[in-house]
Image 1 (cartoon, rainbow, N blue to C red):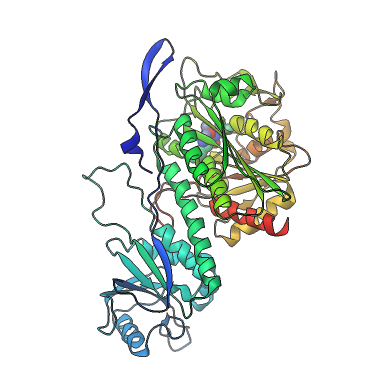
Image 2 (cartoon, helix red, strand yellow):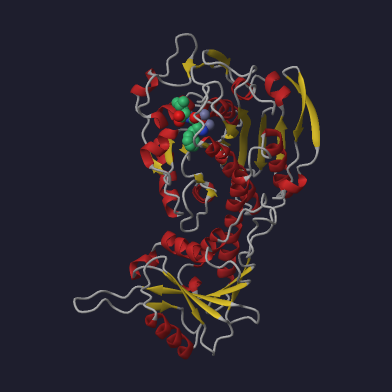
Length: 530
Ligand code: BES
Ligand code: ZN
Ligand code: ZN
């Protein structure tokens, strides 16, 4: 993404009786991530060998020596035992995520060996433990150009994803003053016993998926000064067209004319006008899935304004939209045998003289009226319009995802998405999400909360008058807009979409790209099993 350089074009717009300028271009041309290759031997310019170390078995009288994970015939015995001895000499244990750097033995054509701890022998069966270990070591590789590794002897996909995702950096908005001096590696070579066709396909799949996660991260990391509804819609459209998707953008006048009262209501406090983006990966005679993602490019809360502390976190309030756009592009790139249409509402939630008020009533797309008691519960208003629009396509499944409630983090913490919806589909998504290490957790929709969304004047209120089960009541609100016959799930990613703490595993600070890997796994499962 090269937004800083491309943000120059200005348009003039009239609002609130004043004339002012709005920057409105954002060109997306994501610098490619690192290249990945399979090889049975070292290459000429490899500069570091990354190797896995497993903890020894503990017994009564010893802690057991850690062992190298290499794969048969990949390293000669002399080099392997030299590395092993050097690791014991510096006290490496193989505990999960431990990184040990050594000068390479003279017989190897690289200067440096880096060992990463993979944990105990049982952990080798846990794909996400391997993905995390690969991510941890990838965060330590800046300055090396070409990495060669034996790690793929464990689980090729997990290792490739972890290395790719751990190498992600976002530097588009740094000038030379603070730009990092060292870059992450440009190439990873995975050492394998034989170059099998299946291994090549597995690698291509892993890298394509990881690249889509990076697209979602780029969108989330782009600040709201540069990523606002119009710019977001245009950048998504450009990227989607390049991957062969069909694209439709509804602008603010179309949204108003066609009755998208939720998107218009939330967007009307901002000089940056709302959009609805529709992307389609068309496949005939397959199951069809509607994806919906919350695209609030910044959430001040509106007139029900948020406290200043931590408000900057609300740059991530389009994390659901970013994930849905990246996943739909990924479905096209993988040519999945499932019809996918993304319906993505985009708006900026601002307080102003033109903003909606607490107590206003709006009419959602499709006719349901809503009393807006709290303008900070805006996500459900734009999603409701989009869910109704997605339903008009008669899909078999609808999945929406959103940074919807602070209550998600109260219930499940910052790393675990909540998934709610039609029981069977909800549980299927939770199981598939566990497989990819994103770990969405199934949550209930208790009947008694529905009554608390009754309004004094309209069909529904947008909030309850209490804070109990806030993640669940938001989902119960959304359920009102889902057609009866559709299997539906809602994934709340308020915490998981944006990492405000330190980097961990393959997750950097900032945008995480959650839940792209869950969504693509679900689409693949639907393509395979209906
Ligand atoms: N975007 C927020 C939810 C959020 C909070 C996301 C923290 C990420 C981190 C959402 O629009 C919001 O403000 N929700 C309110 C709902 C309440 C008014 C019922 C909330 O969670 O406080
Ligand atoms: Zn809000
Ligand atoms: Zn929000």
